[in-house]
Length: 364
Image (cartoon, rainbow, N blue to C red; front, side, top):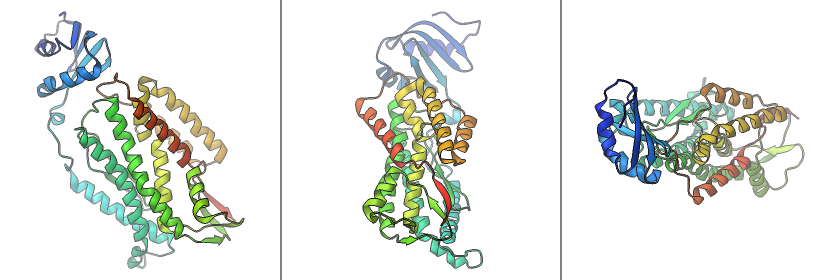
């Protein structure tokens, strides 16, 4: 087993012995705590991961398989080796949730025509909007959380992001992965679980809200939510043809449901670290970056069609955050047909839920 350079690294020999029945080693190299073995994989990648991971993780390493000719064993920092509780740091999660509850109550009360600044009790008028929106966002993030925990991936509780501005009163919520993703299958399941669970909650909220929403003639300057294919269909089913010059005056539940659909659509965009990015990478692997450029071009086209500057903001954020997606530890094992069909279903949801012009102001 030759050694690269003059560095003596006993870990390479110890780790190499653990790989004897998994990988035929021809060469190895040690660099910055990572031991790279080149040679030939003797078993399928998924089998290799299941055999190798329990052998080397107690030593503080995790295996990374990108090709059948190389396995990298990466030394984890000491903090990452400890099994972290999902409740670690919960006071910050709770503080952000309370702050977001306040900002969504404020936004909901303002949209109801109340003045919570001079009349604090008027915040109560924002309860239907705030409770339903936080329920949708919370279920979305908990879909990621419970799926990650089921696979043994260390993950934080949701971090809600308060924003005291309408129409949402929040910038949504995020969770933080605290350990590597084992495989494309796990990456896919974590990515798709959030949108699906959030949508399961958002749709009945929207339906109930539309039932409670009257159709009225529009006068003066009016803010209007955008129409996606799914939203148009629901309005047609529940309200029938809407006369010219009239529109549905959204009940707070309906607005929360509409925002839930919009947030789900944005998360399904196959960009960077969005849920759609996880799904696309799990399907395409290294070809994922070509898809990013395709969808960035699509967002630019949407801007020229709709003239909504938000699409350019998304393009700038995506480029600024980077186009690369961290690979899972097993980056070779492809997804099964069922997950391919689920990926196509997610793409269909994106088309059905995304409004070309999300927000607009009209004068009647």
